[in-house]
Length: 167
Length: 438
Image (tube, rainbow over all chains, first blue to last red; front, top):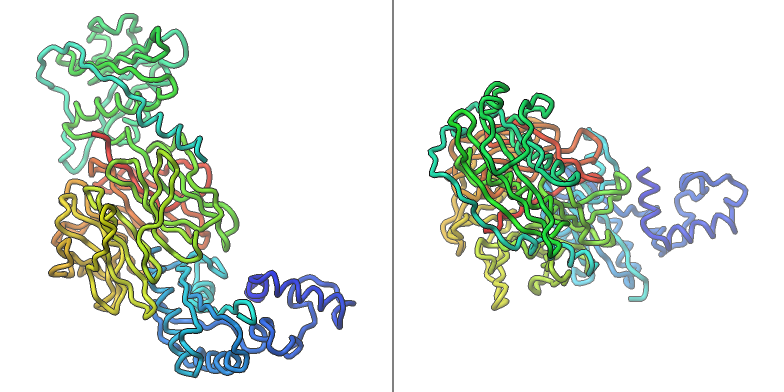
């Protein structure tokens, strides 16, 4: 589910996957979901948005009501920063999200605080801050909806979204 | 789009004339004391208004439903009525109404005028005192019959409780459709009883937190129309939309000042802070009210415009603070367990409603303006975002069952009783109650 959402976020990515699937190694497979496409790590074109999403990881997660960059998130952001410096032409938007266990206005502000913390961390690892926009979705775009922490923890996230190359 | 707004305008302007009919100078003996903790609903008989068609019964039905929903009245089944009203101008046979325990009686008539308008008349009787308490007549266009019914219900409520009614009001809210994960949200407006739903936006852009202007003619809300959260104004009359202010970041959580001249909102900045700002709608000048690296949001004015309540996590978890309307002297006023957000000052000025998170529950509550006397009115998995009826006796909010992301609108009395769901066509959240028209 999560993986699908991640991939389906960009029509360009989906289209690319489909063309790869049809033309290439996955052509004989029955395509039920993104997981069946036969694209293991490293199969994506280096420097492509799917390379970033699949091989680097486009998102980090937060503790409840927190915008502190956790140790696991620091590792992901370090990899993101390396990749983003290698491919400097992408525009970057960090989207901050909150889980549903908060009120709407506070969550919008919390999403922005998470996006800002993420941008600051990327900047500290060498990505020019001016290259990174921030945006908050509060609790408006959950990845998963249920009544337990298993969903809420997936929703407390910041996603590094790449804009068009060459900009 | 334009057409929708013209319909709304015509409804707003529909009630053309109100005239008092002769009432006997009478001392009311039937009253409801709503200052007491427990209120026994008052038995009331609401007869079908005389008319040549179904309209008379429809008007009576709306009046009865309004009064019943308030929890303060118990309309009596029509089947129990003994006297059949044939002349609403003449005194009824009070004995016939006393014997079925109708403490109050409503009679009326609706007739079509030569110019196409409707004339609606009603009389309110005190059956035990044997006298008329109220009598009024209204002229309106036929398509505003529901509104006339709400105005009559307000007159009855006011006469019998001594407080202003709230039935001739509307609610703006966010209509929700689509999947759990990716909702389509549209601004919608309806009468307070859920009738006459109309859509104000088309669902293309994510919209949140609509709020009425004091004149009821404008709405301020947040939209992602230009790619990021920003505050807009919407003129109900013309459908005209306008961005409020040119801020460098995102703006959220708008509300009008009581004089309608300003919008207070929260600016989310690049450093992750959120601060409270106002924009003067005439001069277009912006004023910063708070300066913090924390999250300050959810600002709401006192009815006299002199103070602002807001939520802030400057002390750790979100709590409610109060300050002067110029940003002076911010003081924390909530000190209970858990966190507090979405403060809304009551129209009477004496209470602040809020959302409280504690022990895994979301509750709606009220506290005095100094933070004392907290009372929880409703609790559940997710109750959020109270809005006050203009008479300050009823709150509406949205409730979400566990794990569903499926909100609906609920009202509750200030006493914490009489919890009612408002029927809406789809899922609904972020309600805001309109003021009463003076």
